[in-house]
Length: 363
Ligand SMILES: [Mn+2]
View 1 (spheres, helix red, strand yellow):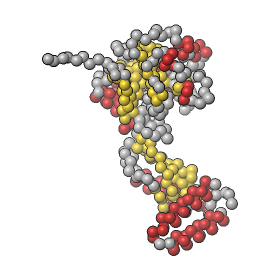
View 2 (cartoon, protein in one colour):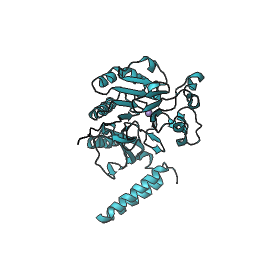
View 3 (cartoon, helix red, strand yellow):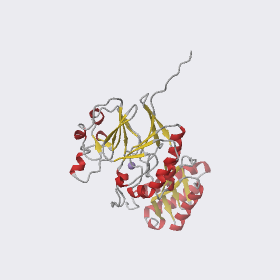
View 4 (cartoon, protein in one colour):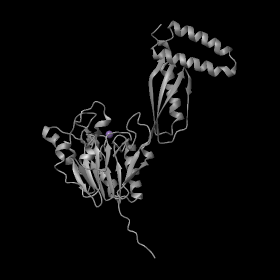
């Protein structure tokens, strides 16, 4: 006997904090890579947990491209819960457009104020970034006021919000940009997916989606999106390699010598940040060292430097401690047998590091 099993439930792809920027074409590729994966899995619904764009200006400039990327796919709907970057331009502080005036194609629904979306087998409570210019606007985001607006759930309810959770932020009153810890209970949500926080966390029914791509220095770990299954009430994380991986590494520089510890093998999607510290003879020498690294890591997605710990020898060479140490060190190093040389190199590095930490000032 054969049974025809009707597979219930549906999958929802939840992505957040992509920060697509017109000036960074690779960020547009992250979105395109995401869409092709979602389509390959035949997921019909995409929910964006905010900060789809880096700013409202990027949203304005890229809206045509954005709607075209969706037209080509079989994805039927995109629910976009607005984030602070979508609504404003945080870097300039000025704003020429309103998100509500823009169109992103037939498939996209932009959610600007808290709302409830009832799907076939799940309810999605969308809570965008609580941008309020007036007290009246603020009221629309007040969780206690909102309670009266939403009927009790008739099916499993989840939430997608662009805000932090009060309990994650020490000494924070439960105000703007933050939802109270009781949010899930108040609205009877069985899962709350949160954008805005660029790392992945889990606390009770709360999950952060994490940034879909490395947005700034220090965003370590994998970047990607979640696939939520309404039937099993489970979610899984999918890595988006195009969203890059951030790696940071210290490199000791002593004139034209560089000492790089740890791995020198990186995936091509890596953003490698090198912390250069030590001494160089001149700015020309510094540039030459950076150029060497640029060649060495030419295949990586991005290479950046921190040079704050890299000093010109002229600023240190006249210091008596520096002179004593280095003259003696040079002699000992040259006299020492080969197998002891690494120890001497380490001693020099430790001295330079300690000396530079004090700015070469203390006697
Ligand atoms: Mn963000």
